Length: 513
Image (cartoon, rainbow, N blue to C red; front, top):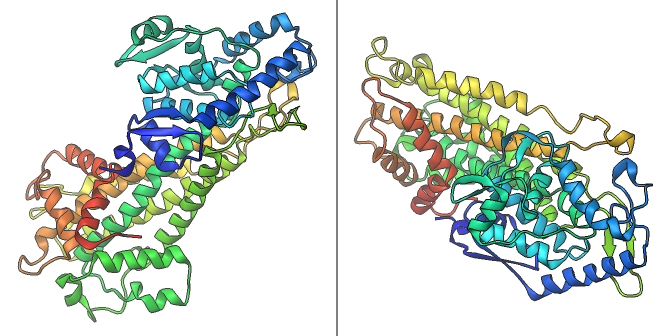
């Protein structure tokens, strides 16, 4: 069980990290507010109410929205403006976001508004906290966002009893879902509609989910590569600590150390010493490619964790005594997230392309010395032939998805928003890229598992690879004739996704980098 899954309560008020985010969004940890959180929300709200009474000019509060920011809104109309924003912005389309994607976005709304610079009532925050703790999931189509506004608006509709929501697995009209959950709808007040849809809340949530799975897959890739190296009777020259020292990229050295740890005490590897000068690049370059990919993913994680604890609203309510102000700016821009997740998708695709090439070496009889496609009677049986086709198809999709979203620009809002970062799709597609990487790695692992039948039975494997292969053997047969492979690929993909694969290796070999 992961640390995220073990965490039962996450208290907002101080900084949260990626593990906290996953605990709430994926594993349903309960959300609480600290006293500091409540105090700073109330303080900024008092300023908004004061300034509304004074009819101070505030973007999206006493003015229209976007290109209509020059249109004055009276004090009496401010509440109607906020509901209108929610209604008019609920225009995203297509398949709905998943439960964890909606949960993650609502958590990011709480983090964004809870920094104390947004001027929203604590009551609004309490409603989203109830949604999370009772697992009431607003229905929010996931296509058609440029970085904010539309999916968030669908979620906010449920606060006022409109739209749709899932409760206990059933999709219901929002009012009915709220009633079943024992939650009262509310009427939005000044600034609240705008604050609920503004900011990088959905790109941050999607990016956090994507990077968590990519990092887990990257660590799993080291374990799976070690299985392939052992089944390929590789030589270990390329992982020598001396080689790493003369090109001292930290992540490269960490991957090489992982491989040495994972293959320690392998008689297969010991017997391979001196049998060849070097292996093919897909085996020999594991530290370099895995290391470079992991650096990119770690860089993205660092950026995301800053965003997890930021206020990305517009306008900003500055509550410092003696310097109180309302500031229109653009913290809602998603460039940081978009650039990082475009890069992360490239890094994940790099991991996938090497995994496919390693798998190809295992199933190619000319390269492996084993029967073609790792089956004892090829011809009558296809063995592991077609899973490599699946890898090829998945890689084709990944290469398209690795094309950057953030280089695009389409002006919106009557050219008031003439530049758009497009960080939403960069983050959204990263989730798909991460899943495809998990499947490609699962297929390589399946080949490594099948290849063990062609290793002499009395030559022992490393403790780490033996632990992994013995666990798999409880669920997957060693294939002597063709079998239905799809369930086995799904099982191995989940073994990777859950983090259990890495846990098995670490239980046997010790903690990996």
